[in-house]
Image 1: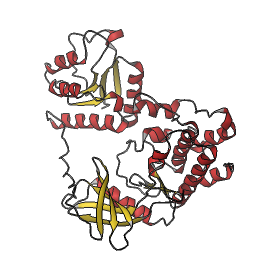
Image 2: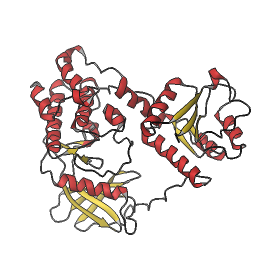
Image 3: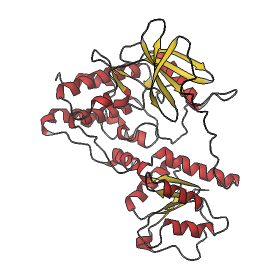
Image 4: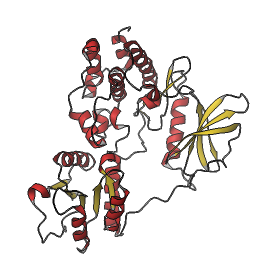
Amino acid sequence: MALRILVIEDHAEFRMLLRHHLSLRWPGVVLTELDPSTQGPLPADFTGKDLDLVLLDYQLGTAEDGFSYLKRFKAIAEFPPVIMLTASGNEDLAVRAIKGGAIDYIPKQTMNHDRLITAIQGALDSRQAGTAEPERPPPTDALPATSLSFEGYKLLRCLAQGGAGTVYLAQETASGKEVVIKVMAQRLPTGEESNEAQRLQREYDLIRKVDSPRIVKLKELGVAAGHVYLVMEYFAQGSLREHLTGPVSRAEALDYVRQIANSLEIIHRAGIVHRDLKPANVMRRRDGTLALIDFGTAKHVGQSADLTRTGTVVGTPHYMSPEQCAGLDLTPASDLYALGVMLYEMLSGSLPYTAATPLAVLYKHQYAPLPQLAQEFADLQPILNTLMAKHPDERYPRARDLLTQLPAA
């Protein structure tokens, strides 16, 4: 039976975005939309018995807001799960939503495809299991800040920390060279590996096969106190992201694009699609050369197994190709699209597509007109148009084809 969802939301564009992304995951979804500000309130005898889920905005442009509806729904026996759509960064709204009976909440301004689909799938699973709340993943075993030790390396300082793990600057005791150690936060479960550990293993296996100065050098993969770690090259000049504080010169932009295209040609020839190309994943060496990093979401084109479920979107919204936004299989053309976004960003100092929510950005990648460069870069517009073509078949077949079209400066 098709999934049946009621969306109570007063913004037509946001309802359209919800319909688009729900249809990607559940093509046969039956979506009923209600805008109380124009259609009036729900009937007094509404029970929700024919629904699987309700997506409810907290602010509806009427005297009766989302929390009034939530209170009403809670009083109905066996009412389907309700996910509240709240304001970004407002924890009070989140607490009110859960206390009021919502099974989950999603901040609208930070919503993305994965967050939306994961929340809905969790709500559906919990209802099928007959539980009052969705099953929450067990808390990860917090990564010790100072107690971990790595044979052959001395930790110097923490470079970055997130939910998945921590990145340290370390020194190789034998050579004195600085390296980076990426450590996964979650301990390995007994008898099996977590998805995070598998991604790190896959990153190591993929990149160890590619011997090129244009790709990050990986030194070692190991386990310390149950935490998987990866030792890699350290880039003292940081990433291209830190360097792009505004537009760069034409010559510099073309140099960067040429270097990145050469890097892509190397990994594509090895059968690898990066799937998350962006300035933060392009590192700068002291001599001005660039290298690609972070192949945790990369995939070999001959690889049948993936660590993401069908219909899941991987990547970073502002740099994702239209087919990537749709959760489809990716080819080297998707990496070239991301390079096109970076070319536009380097020349203009801004991103080609921006919007209030990640979902809206994904929508623009798929349907908005191609971005236009300033007149002084008119000769590069055909190259940008080919890189950012909506259909992958209309882009350059390989990075080497782009390299033949790039002007010298």
